[in-house]
Length: 365
Image 1: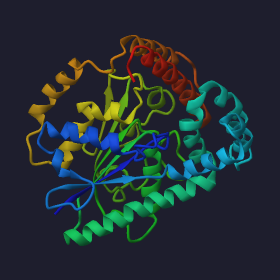
Image 2 (image 1 turned 180 degrees about the vertical axis):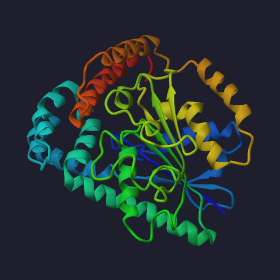
Image 3 (image 1 turned 135 degrees about the vertical axis):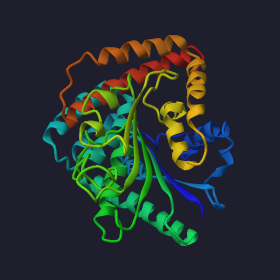
Image 4 (image 1 turned 90 degrees about the vertical axis):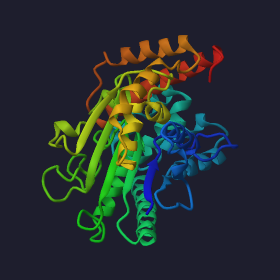
């Protein structure tokens, strides 16, 4: 029998070089590099899984955002002309609509490559609903096929980052409305979330009371997840400042949920998928669920110590600048609302843009 690992991206996944169009390349390479330390790198495959291997299924939805960017590119030569086109969309929140010009100015290029994805998913139903249906279909098709291949219920895992945590939550909620998909028919072995934003972007499916919650979370018996992990970085404003996801503060018991905070900074983009995933406090929790028969506890402290001693990105001045500016963001009184969250995201990506440029000047990436 093989297992399934669904991996879902966050915002900005479509902003990729033409010679590397697949958003999951770096993520899966990093995951395999971490698994190689435990001789499991070859167990993570993208096709033709063998017995005891893990079939990795990238869940992809960024093409819906990319399509409208392509449409706008044909209508106007550069993104300076995109704002009026964005304002013409059917935003269901006047407060967000009114803030668009300021957000676009503050975030610069990151607004159009990253923040736009969040805005379209959260505020424009013409994107929200099709994306949920698209991801739900990808999950259902792969899961049903695996159960047929295995001849039994397949162990299923999810790994989600940033906006992808909200999309995954909503898509599982969407699937849960089907009588053929739910706690009585399907079980999720583990969900690992990195920078979980499903509470602040809540839209139709309650963050703490939907079908993807732990089995042991009230009210029984509707939860369908055996183990739910949430990781956030102490310097990631996107995960920390507005409506921080905390299942443990909302009735989720310790035997089904764990919340952990990363503190080490190895890259100027502390919010990045691979920056989270490279940290052993995150990937070891996933490995514990993928390969539960191994003795993982003795491996944890040495792995964390090795990660702490690793040098990180080769641009120390840029890293120091990013740390200082990110710390300053936490002193600002951002409103605890969805548009307040966008304020945070815009300010954060402005810091990242400056740090990226500074890192390049130091000879980094």
